[in-house]
Image (spheres, rainbow, N blue to C red):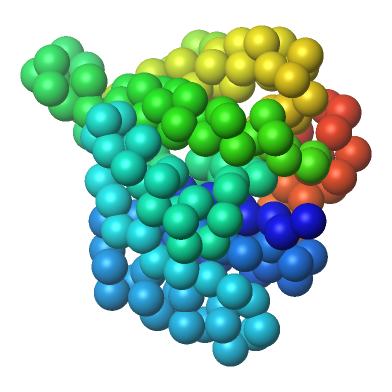
Length: 229
């Protein structure tokens, strides 16, 4: 049976490694982000490795765009088997000075659009063999005073809030979708990843190792959460 992974928030690092890892297992790969040029380059790079891939430019901060996005992927590559959510937003860096739109924007990318994409893909996922929702998260969402202080120092309060909400959504979706045979798993990255925009030459985490962790979760379909770093 044909398999398609929807990679939302495609860019250098984790999402590229996930696309390559799942593509090597026979998945067609749908790449989603706002930067069409980056998507086209990513699709060509995957094709050079023998992986069927296509670019789907979209604003993942707009929950209303999810149904059309999933429909385009389905028409081009076939029904969605796996949703990989790697998108995030750095809006609302200081919550005390952030406007409502900035806070809403951070939460839309992390939670509302993720949920809208899952809802749009749900008919495909329910009909698929070994369907899954795989989510990338970050350690700033942890409920810990030391992490809270770090988020404030890093001017990343909106991201921390969004990560915490995303973690809760992962747990809720996992419980809700068990009866449908849809696995939900999250990898929380506790450190800097090589090759990403945050890498200033001191990153220690290998994207391929994180992608392998995602594939292990997908294959074993047991633990809901795993940490890397």
